[in-house]
Image 1 (tube, helix red, strand yellow):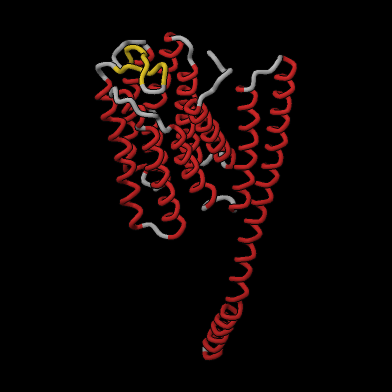
Image 2: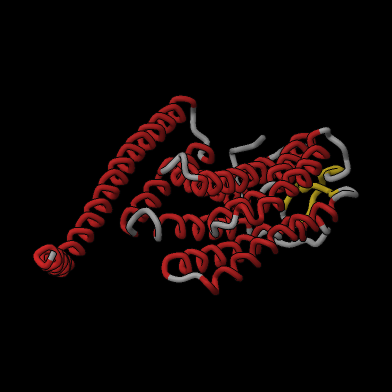
Length: 324
């Protein structure tokens, strides 16, 4: 494995890995008991592990290593559309109606995963050079069936989002719009591997996958939990972490300097995490205060009407009692 030189395609996969990990971990940490947050984190986990496998595949210096990471990439990619459907069903609040498709998907994609783990040559036979990549998986006899189900599940996600977009309103409609945008761009970036697997030499636009993660993350955070200012702070903090990590991986330094950079990296991560948690706590307090103020305004506006109604009822009851 050679980390002394990381090309653009490997760097793109590494960016996708950390962006996915960041959004998934952050959203999950806000409400660990929420099924929506859990499903989003699971979706981000498979995207992150898939891209990490692609990174190590590109950086591999031997066909044996490349084959291992090539199989790993297909393994995690198998569960990307399934986890995406799982998140979508919970997000649209239609889990009970369509959960059978997720259960069938677990069985289907687990079969393909088993074909990789055994290992057999049914899905991945070997690795070989194509386009700008020194090693890329050569697909086996089960690959067309795998690709069929992979595409089918993403088509199901697109269909559900479009159908429910028409009847949505307000925040929900804006969230679906961002998710559809990210899903479209993400599939453009992700489908490049299937084109390469078909033997068509193209330059894989892996970096486009980051737009999928940003769109999903923006839909979850901007329109549900936090203000755009807090969101920008989080993204900036994460960008600093990533730049420092890339420096550690790419710059050839002596052992002492590497340890120094690693120490700085972990210090910045700890400080950044602490500051973000403080910001999140303050943001939640502001939201609670805003809700309380809204309730107080509502009570003030309706207090006179309620007093008048109650006074009228008391007078009516008094008249009835007087007549009796």
